[in-house]
Length: 150
Image (cartoon, rainbow, N blue to C red; front, side):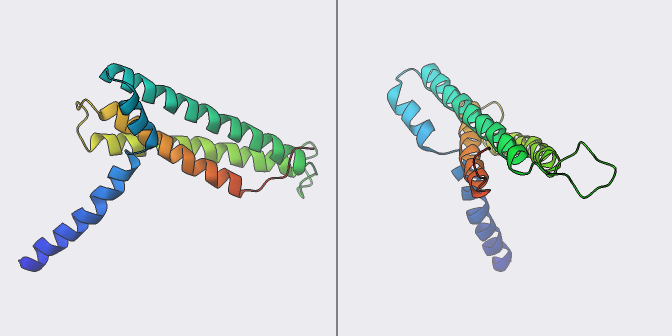
């Protein structure tokens, strides 16, 4: 019985902090320090999330343009005269970004629901989670190391 309790404690120790870290960040802290009114702090964080989404969207758009520009040669398929490697690559890239956006939304809904969907901080947990995941995804996109568009 002691082993089961110990195992449960270990699992909880490692699983809860991993979710908690997604909902904590500089943006949330700074908004709540800068604004006395809670509604203003929530609005501040929401605006930071919107800015983060815009930055990510711009980077995805730029990456797609770079892909199309830098891989502007025909595919090996004999029946695809108008198709380029870049157009195929870009299609898969953009499809993967749509899937990632769904993943981000659903994961952050889960993280925020860990405090209860009716909790006052629910939206701020969700917003900070999305900001944190956007930051990580921006790093991933930079790792693609695409040359500038021609």
